[in-house]
Length: 336
Length: 299
Image (cartoon, rainbow over all chains, first blue to last red; front, top):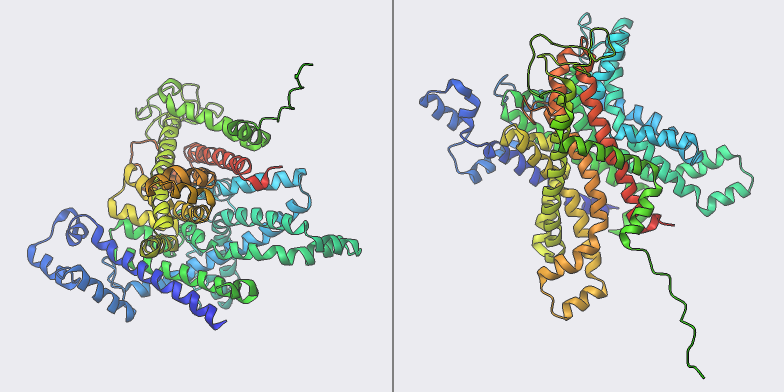
């Protein structure tokens, strides 16, 4: 097992170095002088320009700059935002719980609906249920989620007036951030209205962000379930006279879940990409909206830091999924 | 005594590959529907001026935010209504089809060409070249696709061409990995050795011996990339990083209409519907392609 862990870790390290290089090059690949670009059309006087060049270390050769960048990185220093002058890391850690809360809710939504839908489609293969579920999930998979969000706002916030249009919680409530997860924090605040408001704000973004994973999970569950249902041991279980529910729910599901769990683990990247769009539509104060705003303001240190941090999170989750998979499945563990 | 014997029983000729492909593709109703929709969209994209009733960029100050014809206040002059500065929605949507299909097609061509070459090189060269290429692809796969595209557009600057380049780069790893994997498995086969022994050079081996045998999964992947490209390019447009106004790109139209979402439902509903229908038709065809090209699924 140790050997397996070490092999996987040794594969991650060069990738991580690659991501740092990519994040580093980001500022340097922008055509023109980064200081002038950031100053915008107003221009900047030469003395200030030279001082800023020195402050950001832009007067050094790029290899030296990369060395300095890595050194700062090892100290947890990703630079400061050019607009707010806050450290990038602290901005990220403040906003990340909002993205995490939304993503977890979306995944939960996708699993709770996707697994049963995929199972029903597999059990009732080639019936109207199967075709209906697969048709809907193909549409979900093809969905431009930024439009889907606007449609839901139009229907539920506009016409029906059931849900709020944007934000995480109504401005009436001030919640002290203890965990950063508003659902938990608002429960702790002894104000039932705050919790209700947080839930109401979460519903539409969850549906929007969960749609593509839901479609992927439903399709994967169906195909994996169909494969398992054709196995000999399922026929044996049926022949023994086990209840159909037991055969499908226990014997088949357990084995059918393995590829599904892998797919769920691989959704982190999809979720982040979706979070960028979902947070923009619902003005959700998370890292996705933060990055989009940073592009609008040409705040390159934020973009650079955000790319590195998100890359690291995705790599970390993929590594954990990989290791867990090895833990569950000895065939994977001993192959490498 | 005549030596005539009965003709040997004729072996049933195997159907032409294209014919066989069509047989399996046609059997999939969804795929056929996808093809029909896609052909209709392609017609709109090829001859937008023939189908569009108005110019896509002409503004009419006297017809702002007109609803579609079936709503009160709508008229057949603007069948799907007008946007906030009085441009005809239907004409913009039709011209948008051209942009979306153009973006999807260019992304597929660019990324397929670059990805296949990189994959072939990685599969043939092995050693340090292979490691370098595959590690680079790993780095690209680490970042969420849309984030990487955003970063590239942030570097190159927003615009239609840069958005195409960004999406083409983002989808590259899937082709490279697929090509390399099939190249490595093909290289071990006898026909490659035979070709090598008879003196075929590396380039000939790459493109004329090995590549044709790796094509089936690449074609399926290309259909997936086509739909991803349309979605991602529209997402970039929506974020203001793709095609710039006054181009009637569907994602950009959505971004323009966003602030009117509660007042004029049609300015956001139709462009998104157009994206959904296009992507759905391509994905339906992709499913059919996979069924028709995957020997495991054939009966």
